[in-house]
Image 1: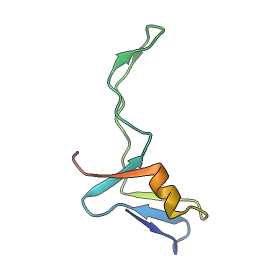
Image 2: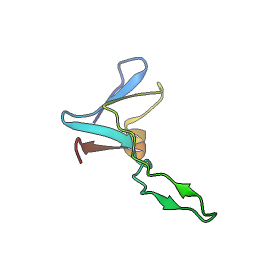
Image 3: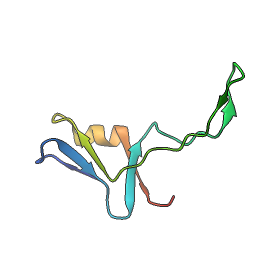
Image 4: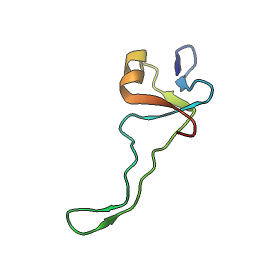
Length: 72
């Protein structure tokens, strides 16, 4: 993944054949919580382009986002 700093707003673009997701957005299977409520299955949200603020750095990119091959 690459951070483009010369665009306004800045943007992160995934490498070819890959997509990006927030590092904390993970798959959660369907389950029942402590109160007995059914929590539906959650799939992560993926993108190939993410627009970020003008003060966003490459270090923040690696702290907040992860790149994975498409189809994984």
